[in-house]
Amino acid sequence: MPGFYKNDNGSLLWSADRVINDNFQLWINLKDTYVYPVEGWIWADSEAEARVILNLPLPVESTEQE
Image 1 (tube, rainbow, N blue to C red):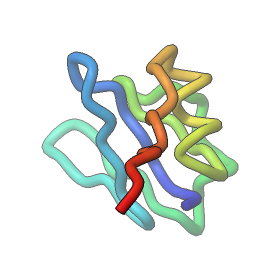
Image 2: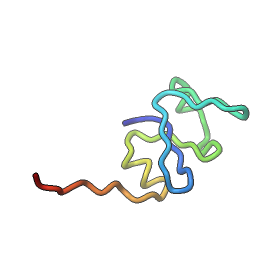
Image 3: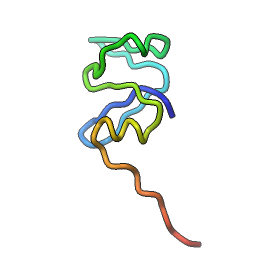
Image 4: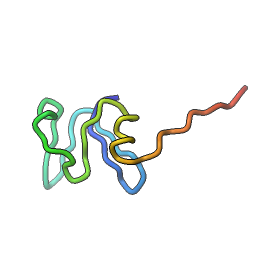
């Protein structure tokens, strides 16, 4: 899913349309105007793209059989 992503000590954080804290605000309608990363946050068009940019492993797909 497209959105804002951040590597938080190996965990992937995601927000679809905004990130708001005391230091900054990121809004989807302004996503192309920011210089990334913004305090670790980036914009990516998919989780896989974000994981590559943030140097996180891709999720392992389950191969369990029922």
